[in-house]
Image (cartoon, rainbow, N blue to C red):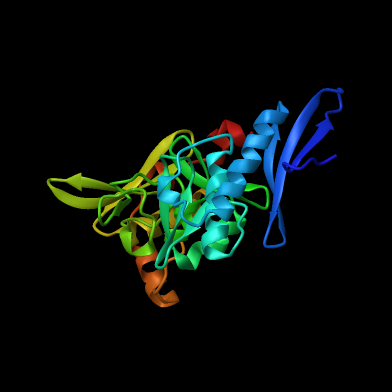
Length: 269
């Protein structure tokens, strides 16, 4: 039953009691969370009402309380912008911020607003991803960057801020599978690599395009020789079939790729 403070007393399957706090604002019923005792649930309700009803309370001045910081962000945005998102997003005139934690605040273009409103941003091992159709999708893919690309080598931030994920700030230096940027005699080069029985160098090339095509060629050769691993293929944008075929035919790959025999690969025995 709900009391005057917007608190529900309820029980778990094991019979233990806990309290749920919620409120209604602009005809929207909003859950504020679950608490072990009625006093905390009531305080959370009052905090929620204070955020929504006190227009003089600014988001930048908010500290912390019984409400989760994520929920506080959601309430401030709903109050100020009139849109309720389930994710901790605050919308500004030219961009929006996603509050992964109180201290980890990412900036995105407004074009991405409804994507992140419906996809929860997560981080593991320094990588940012969302869950989509049961799969973990790196958000780097939205910038044409490979999922396990290295910052500073394969991509960089124009203003040096890795939390600023607006498209104009993210520079993709290497969009291809199996290609790494290396330096040879002080000159940037592109090394194509592929994994079979360990990492294998396909070759080093003057351009990323050549390295990407060399990688594709190595994949084709391994598959023809019976290697069963599913490799991603590089899509070469802006290159016609004839030009692609000419580069593909003339590109050199390592002897280890050419001489590979599936019969010597224990995975295919």
